[in-house]
Amino acid sequence: MKFITSIYVLSVAGASLALASCSASGDYPGTEYASQMYHSVAYEPLTQIKSEDAGQWLSNREDGKGEFFNSNPHNPHGMNMREPVANTVPRNKNGILPYRLRVADLEGAALVENPVELTDEVLAEGGQLYLQYCSACHGAQGEGDGKVGEVIGGVANLKGGAYKVLPEGHIFHVITHGKGRMGAHGSQMSIERRWKIVHYVKQEIQK
Image (tube, rainbow, N blue to C red; front, side, top):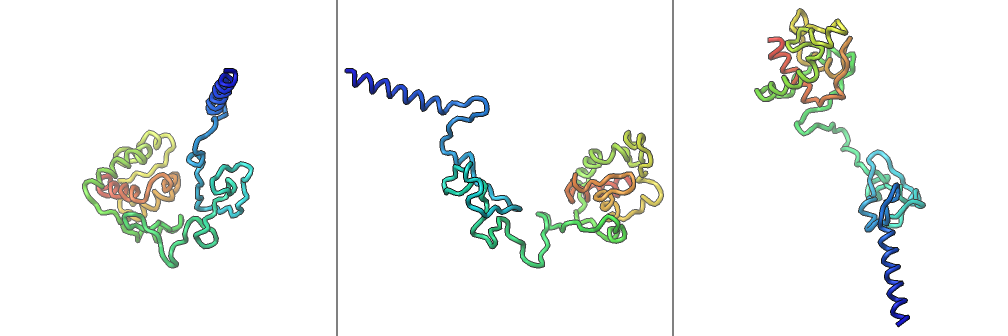
């Protein structure tokens, strides 16, 4: 009887200990089941840590390698991101090339044609984007009378003088890189969105 009682007590103690080890509190996440699911090996495209022992002290990887090892043994030089084919230029999903003209190359920009086809849908989206990004300075009608424009001054009136005859490529270039008081917006909008704004400016603001 005492033997059975001892087994019962040990079983209860063991179960209690197992359950307690799974409980989380504070910064302790508790014992993990299938830890590899939570700590997957991420392949970083721009870094390759080739030492299989890197982070061994922290590792719980099933392959026995260090936690920080992330080199891809199947690609040349252990790279995780394959290099593009020589002499090729990447295009986006709509077939548009990256915009590589430098800030000062306004003459070259003037020769660039709008690659986005003009449709009613594109014009409507361009209007929304203009309202979101441009109207604060240039005003709803492009006359340089936006609330921010009134404060900082010197904002271009897109309907006036030489501005009205600017080529589409020039406008796109200035949206991308900025000019004078206008800041660059290339990092804030995709190429397609910038070209849609150009369509709106030429078709609606400067009509």
